[in-house]
Image 1 (spheres, helix red, strand yellow):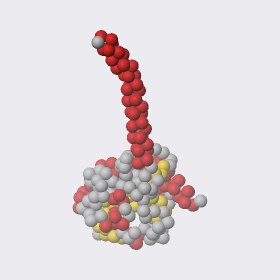
Image 2 (spheres, rainbow, N blue to C red; image 1 turned 135 degrees about the vertical axis):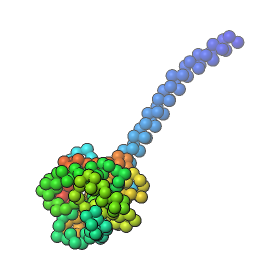
Image 3 (tube, one colour; image 1 turned 90 degrees about the vertical axis):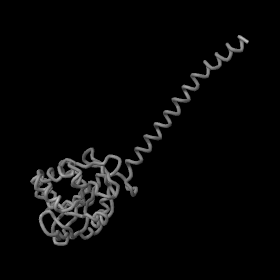
Image 4 (cartoon, rainbow, N blue to C red; image 1 turned 60 degrees about the vertical axis):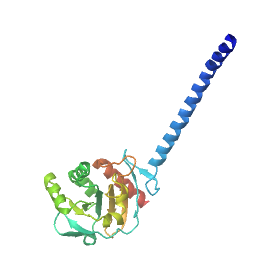
Length: 225
């Protein structure tokens, strides 16, 4: 009987390294699968478009409508008073900036950052910047005044324009608000460059002007080839 107990103990002792080794192997496989899944999610948008990166650490994807396509119509109440119609800006290069709104302070800091470096955007040929969000225009006006901003910010409360540009596909709030998207519209009303920064998994809501300018420049250079 004693011999049987000794044999059983030895068997359990011998099997422990095997179990530990198997456990480690399973853990390694699981971690590998998690890593692969995360990397795969970083390479796709909600619609499966590849991630683009250039001139820095800020990754973005390119939604639709994209470069080469006609920019959908925009006519919305503006912080500058009355309505702003994109059609009236034909002949100018317009940088559209779709953003999450009042709950996103970095989004407003982004406008301040662009205004601070406006000469660098002018050097790229950008004539004017227009921001679009879903908050009521009276609250937008108050925010603009509080931060002493001059950029026209448009109110799109029913997301009609945001949905036309699919800018609400890249935010942290599902599709109820916009993300952090930039769309460059040329003087003929065609989209020349687009970057949607706000999507999963990073949810970038602020891009330094130096990076944004560099990425626009790289995008325009690539399109010209």
